[in-house]
Image 1 (cartoon, one colour):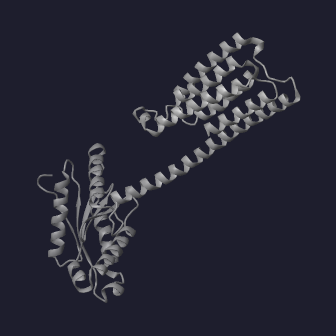
Image 2 (image 1 turned 45 degrees about the horizontal axis):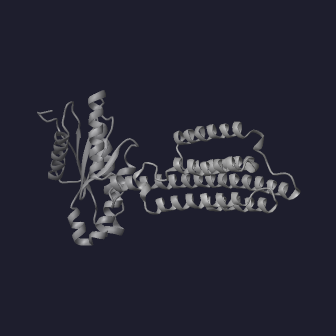
Image 3 (image 1 turned 135 degrees about the horizontal axis):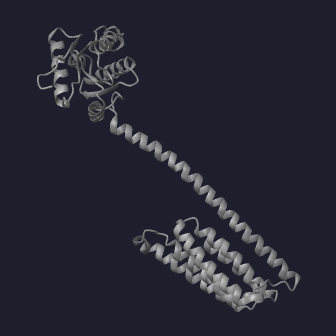
Length: 349
């Protein structure tokens, strides 16, 4: 894009020379300086030499070098100085695609000071070649092409912003998917053990701050090994998925379900202090599981769940609460399964 912009200005300078409005050495010198600058920057970018800088595109030196070429040409050929001043707008439009605000302000002030000096020094020598109709036509064409280039750069910048917005949406969607992979159990879609235990600890810390009690329940599918042995692991996986959906449907929006391991699940009941409330909620889920139509999966063999419930006590550690819930679950298994047991407060708590 930069080379094409330079080529446009060089062709217009050659047209001025052909129309008698400019010495031939001016476009040749301008072309040589432009070629040297573009080649130098190309070599630096291709060799990855600029990777050592925080701004890999060295935008400020890029701006200053190309501005210096135009400012030098203005000093040497003030006949077309007004047009070359307008070319500076194209250079700044290029640079603004990459530059930080701080670098842009520095470059703008530096170039503006040099332009002010040249205007004061050159005076009325700073002009436009308008002696003949061909020269006037070239001036009009040059102005039009400068306007076109700045407009195209503005359009390009707009497209970059749209692309960036689209990429940001894709990135946000990717982060959501990564978060799901990091926190969700791949088979059932509920929280995995790490995620539910983190919520467990967060809820405990909130209880220590606010005094708001919470409860947990450990759930275990009864005789699940027999399901895998008799019907295969694919059926067992589908049973776990169906079971998870049943439990989630029976919970409040503020409660959370996580897969604790194998066929064991952990339910976190937030802001719950009433024993009867928790047991009633779990018993309702137990009944939903027991009465669910499992025929399509287990061919008439019922699927039931046992659960151990415990309410967190003040200053009770996570391990202590889990131990009480686990003991209650063991008691439920001992009592014949398909039932709910409550874990009494531990002496340590």
